[in-house]
Amino acid sequence: MRLNRLLILIAIVFGTTAVAQDDSAKPKISKDQLTTEQVAIYRAVLTNYVKGSDGTLNVSNRTDPPDFSFDNECMRGIVFEKTKDSVPTVHKLSSAVLIYPKMILVNPEQQLTKVKDNDPGNLVNKTIEGRQRVTKKQLDKAVEQAFVTGLFSLSEIVFDKLHRHAIVSYGFVCGGLCGHGGTLILEKVGDMWKVQTTCSSWIS
Image (cartoon, rainbow, N blue to C red; front, side):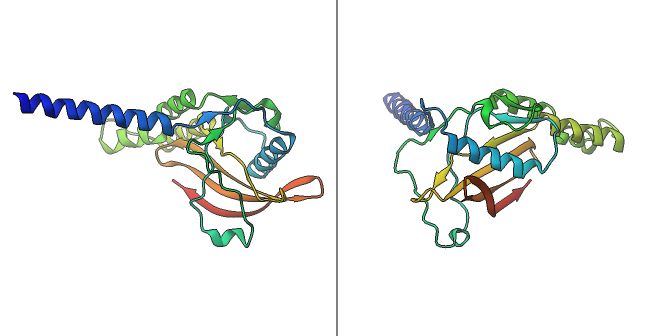
């Protein structure tokens, strides 16, 4: 009995430690507003992403931590500043980053619930399990709805030492097997920020 109690106590201690570590790893939200330069970069990324489209786009109202998982060869000698903070910092986005009226800022957790509810995979699973016969029209409508409720997110911006280049990751999620994203390097040309190259991309 004592051994069982000891094992339970150890499990509780380790469980509590794990929770504490998870909490400490969560990004903290900066109290600072985005700078004019950061806003310009996010607008450049969004402009590059939509490529003239003006459809609905749900943009996460806060950034994600930066992503450095791409091949360093892509940086072509550019030295980006990596944060040494043990806890990553993210920012709340303002409407200043949005480039047209159908772009809206959303709470990412709430929007991901809608993404899950509208995942086209739900319909596909019903077909596979034989519970429902699905027509092409129904599937097309499900995919269309998934794109309407999908979530677009932006990472924190990382600059090089001279603030002439910046790196940003983005992602669009519309279901378990519905989404895409990438990591972009931008260059400051005159007073404008322009997408120079795509370092990595993914599709699910």
